[in-house]
Image 1 (spheres, one colour):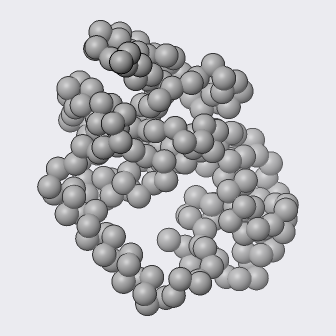
Image 2 (spheres, one colour):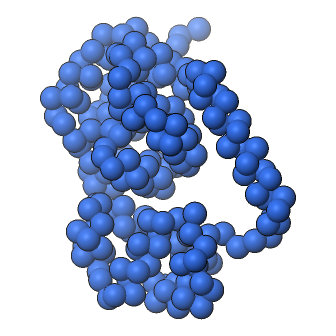
Length: 224
């Protein structure tokens, strides 16, 4: 049986990092770097050029911006697998990466190239590289969420994330997508994806309706 190479797309702002990592990964048996890109905007313009099995995404600072990118990447490239590179070695950062929708794995900021390659092969095989400490963290968080669900009930409305609330507040101030992107330090495509997610979550058709709905239902006090 002929095995297909694992196709990798590297998403990182630093060109030297992209090229160095791409060249090193290309020397690994069974791994092929299909493309390298500096930002989501390039993928958003022509997603057909950036086909891959796994996307390696930079853990930019602050980390929430990176997590926004991972969520938006799932919107642009549904079903793609993502590994976040350079995650701070803290319980909070690791849990945030585990909980973000779309992330399949992560490599810590003190990780090695071997860690990257091992994560790629594990994710491609449908597995996750996870230390006993991190497994315990994830189990404890899942237990806490289960207790919370049992307490509040499964029919509670979906709350907006803090970033989604930032988007709503900006819309309320009359800002356009470009102005919101500048205000929050994110890309315009990221803003568009957040707006789409908000409307989908609230089952609404337009931005102004979302603003009214959030104000009427007091979502500001229910952020999580």
